[in-house]
Length: 353
Image (cartoon, rainbow, N blue to C red; front, side, top):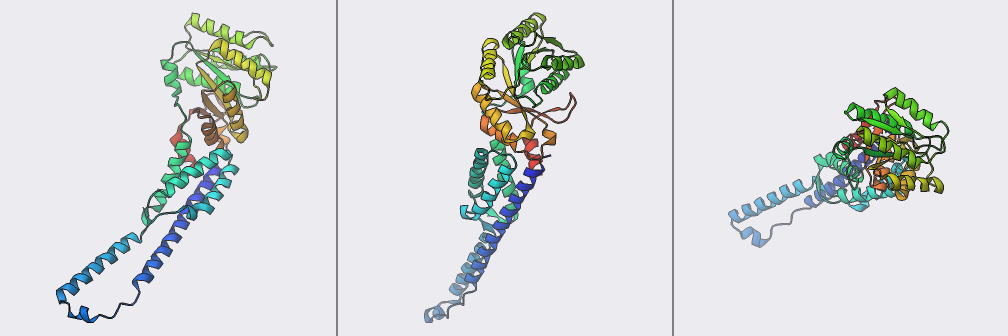
């Protein structure tokens, strides 16, 4: 998992440390050369000075030498020192599915952190790693944090959740996994079969519902999706059900008619949470889809599927940075229980380990 970006980040850390040590060695060699300059012959005036004054001068020189020695083990990286290394990092990030704009932002913040202060030689490794870690955590910071269980617990019931995304990302299956996650935490669920467009979509949702013991509100194929979801909300209200989970037709963000239908669904039912489901393996395609869905209907959060199979790891960084929306859950396997709450520190530890 995340082998590509992990390898490239470790390469960056190693190259930066190597460059810093090279600069430090050059700095120390220059200072040593200065110290080895031949001493000036004592002047007639110096010879006449009392022994105490000469001893005092030697003591001052000794202290200066000590200070120089201490300073020679410290250095401050410049932009020039980092130019080549950061250029290579940018290429590496892009090859690991990090969007160009996100890669540029990472480089900008990283350059600022690495050139901001002097650092001791024995702290170089931790300084470089901490700078990178802080940068990645900043990139993964959304405009508004969402604690999924906390939101469900504290919102008026029923909580209305809409699942959005293109076909093939595992949207319907992910909705079923999210239902299992909430049921394990004590919430009651009802499904709305809002995908009335794709052949077999209602039957697929019914199969998941049967496996989980969840009721499905459905109409016939081709029915008005907004009406199906509205009926599910009414049923949940009358039966005191905690959460309505609404499936929707998978649609490309370029399909104007289906996107207009989605706007109608949102207008009629006022969902509390609009979750974009993206496939981590599709890299920059997932980023572009999330960006366009956010522009079209406004997403609130993201679930990334197939995270356990993602060798590159860049899509998570890019989706959060591009949309400013949090990743709340990630798919880590095939079974209903394989949905994990996304933790930024866990993710950064994984890609830097």
